[in-house]
Amino acid sequence: QQMSGEDEVEFSDKDEPDGDGDGSSDCPTVRAPLTSLKSHQGVVIAADWLVGGKQAVTASWDRTANLYDVETSELVHSLTGHDQELTHCCTHPTQRLVVTSSRDTTFRLWDFRDPSIHSVNVFQGHTE
Image (cartoon, rainbow, N blue to C red):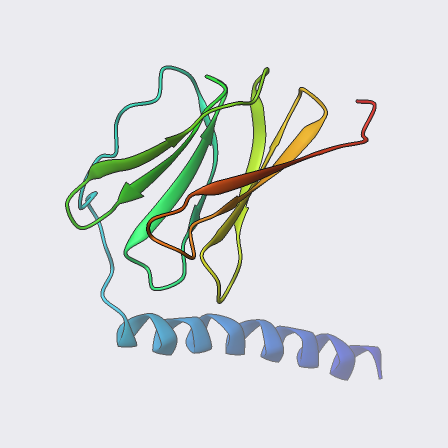
C-alpha cells in the first residue's frame, strides 16, 4: 500500500507541471520589463494594482506611497504624510481605495473614488 501511495504522490506531482504548462501557454510570458516606474528615493517595499489594472501603487522606505499610471509611466500622486518608513500597501479589489501602513504605528486609507477629491483617513492604535 505504501508503494501505491508513493505512486499517487508522484502522479500528482507530475500533473502539476503539466497543468502549469497548459496555463502558461494561454498567457504571454514577459521576459523584459515593459516600463520602469521611478521616483522613490528609498527601497520599494510593496506594490499593488488598482482596480482596472491601469494604475499601480508602491510603498517605500522614503515614507511615501506613489500612484502611477502604468500605461504612461507617469507619477499620478505622491501620497505623503507618514512619519516613518512604509511597511506595506494594499488596494481594494473593486473600489479605488488604498491602504498604507508604516513604522510610525499608523495606517492610512486613501480614497480615489472621486477624481476631484483625494481624501485620507489616519488610523492610530498600534504601539509598534
